[in-house]
Picture (tube, rainbow, N blue to C red):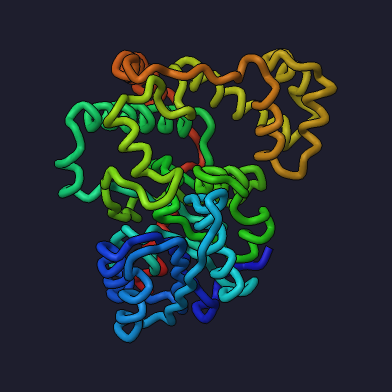
Length: 374
C-alpha cells in the first residue's frame, strides 16, 4: 500500500452535516486554529432546512484550508448517518488522491489545536489509521439524566477493563497500552490508499465508523487508538441524522437499553476470547504447529480452521473463526449486571498485571509526539 510520509501529501477532512447552523461555526473555528491545517475541508450538507451552508461559506476566508461545501438532497432511504459520512469521505478521497490522507469528524465536533497534526504524525510514522476519542460537551452533559451518566460510566469503565485484559493476553505492539476502544466518526484518520483498499465505508445506515474500523482490522491494518486525541461533541437529545449518537441518547432517556454495548461480554468469556485469539495468531504465523489443538479448543473441524488460516490476513481469518466457533459466540450483558461484571474483572486484571509480561508492547518512542516536535 502507498506510504503516507511526505508532509506535502494532501490531507482532507470530511464532515457530514444536516441542520447544523448552531454548531458548525464552532467546528470550523476549531479547524481554523489547527497547528497544522489540512489542505482541504469537505462539508457535505444534506437535506438541510437551515443556513448551515451559508454560515460555512461565510467562514471560508478565516480558514487556512480550502473549503468545499456540497449541498445534496437525499431520499429518506439514504438520509442517514452512515450514508452521509460515506458520501463525504468519498469526496475527500477524490481530493486527497492515492498518496494522501482522509480525516473525518462531526459537524458538532470541536477539535483540539493539534488534532490534524497528531493524526498525520501517526500516519507519517507508518500507521494505516488513527482513532481518537469522542467526549460529550460538559455543558450538555449536565442536561443528561444522572442514571444515564452512571450507566455510561459503568459501561466505559468495564470496556476499559476488558481492553486492558486483552492487551496483556494478546498484545499488539503497534497499539500498546494505554489506548482506548472508541471507533467514532468524530475522529478517524486513514491513508487514502488504505481507505480504497478496504472498500471505504460500508453501505450501512448507522455504525459506519465501527464497520469501517472492522474492515481495517480484517486486513491487518496498523491502527493506533491514541488516548491523547479527544474531540468534544454535543450531547443533544434531538439528532440530525438517523442512526447517530443523539438518537441513542434520546432513546435511553425514554427507556434505558436492556443490554450493554454488543462488544461487551463477561470477564471469563473476554479472557477466553483473548487467549484463543493469541493462540490463533501464533498458528496463523506458523500453521505447522498447534492447529489440531486450536481446532479442538474452538470446537471446529481441523480442516475448517486450516482453511481459515490460509487467509493472507490474520484479521480476516479470526473474523471467520469468530463467526462460526460456538465457544466464541457472544452472550450480551444486561446493563443492570455491569457493576457486578466490573467487580469480577478487576481481580483477573490485577493478576495479569502481576504475571503477564508481553514482549514488544511498548513503542520505543511516541512517533506522533516525535513528529510533532520536528
